[in-house]
Length: 407
Image (tube, rainbow, N blue to C red; front, side, top):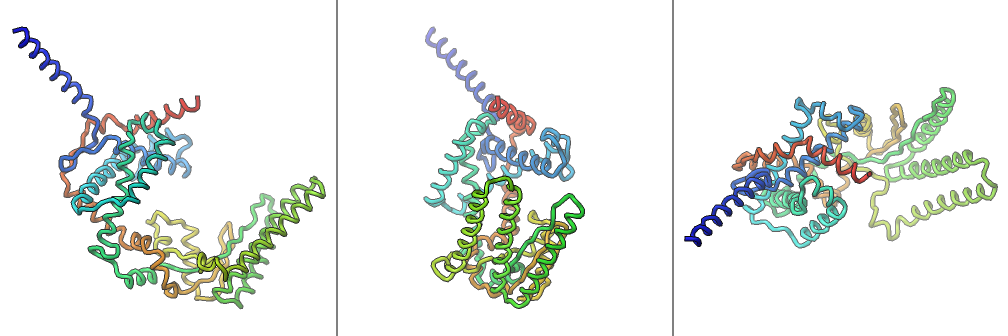
């Protein structure tokens, strides 16, 4: 009888313990996707990343003077905390979906991928492990977020890379480049920043004369020859900087001034030496010196993350110019002298930049695929965990951690 009582007591104790553990661990996952749990640490890491990104965007954009003020702001019609929470949840759902699709397609991470992930995790944990733990993010969760990026890329390649299910032919990539990219060389010459009106007027007059001289000279040059203008301005700028430095150090000894002159001469000689060796070993390293190739469509699209009004206007000026004909344009801060060439002549650009071009060409399409897969997944959010790991708590923990570090 005593044995039965002891056994019953043990059973009750075990049940209580199990219930307690279940209660404590019910917030250890953020959601389930087709029955598989996703660590709460993954959700927290995405919330932390989104929160930090939005806060610094507001801070450096001049919308807030203190990061805590962000909680009073709205983003896309949502209050700050709701926006960050929703964004983190969407990212966590995508995380679960990508992992499931990766397994469904029978894909595997390569040995190199695993080594890179391991190195990244170690580096990240060595630098911020204490902070992550203070936020409730485990090392395993950090590892899984790194793996997610590699798995997403592997799925992208499964569809669009060479030999992929929806492989993009090289000719299509070349057509995409021809239609969307521009190729040019550029000299940027800053205008005066003086606060004195007379000084500013005088300096800008000198700069304008310099620009007109370069432009006149560039009219006799072709695209390759435009390097001469770039080299001349680089030499002018070095000499000017050295002159300004000497003027600001007029009370230094003559010996110091002599040493500065020697250093300038050495710099100039080194530059000439580098240029003269262009047809030697360095030719393979830089077949197109001073040349820039950019996605004009992205650069001039106001909805693009890369959009900048001044840069977009400059790109438009370059795009509208005649190939091989030097031209100039200026805004409030700079003069620009440029020359463009036909991007179609760069037949090697596709081979050298295939991965980037595939992302640019098929990135939106792939995002739509992933969004479709997310909708097809049976996902259940663990609201208890989401309510526990609020954006405000994540911010407060971050603040507390760094305050302790300072103290």
